[in-house]
Image (cartoon, rainbow, N blue to C red; front, side):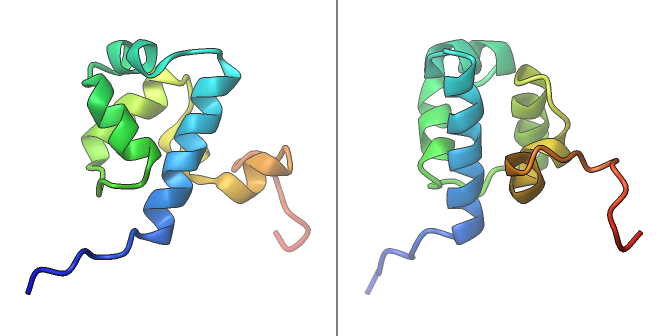
Length: 91
């Protein structure tokens, strides 16, 4: 019995973040794929949270979006307009 595994919440959130950043720039999946050196179908799979993306490809996407990997993964702070290098109240 080969059951389909549910999508990882982390992969879905990353995919939504990639899509948000791509759309903010008014880029198609093809444009992002070309800038990142990846196939456009791969971008679609990432945006839908269907792939467990490797670090090398995550780095390529972040660089194409002119972000660090940390910024790309840091969804909560980015929504608040904060950066990873900013001090927090508890720091």
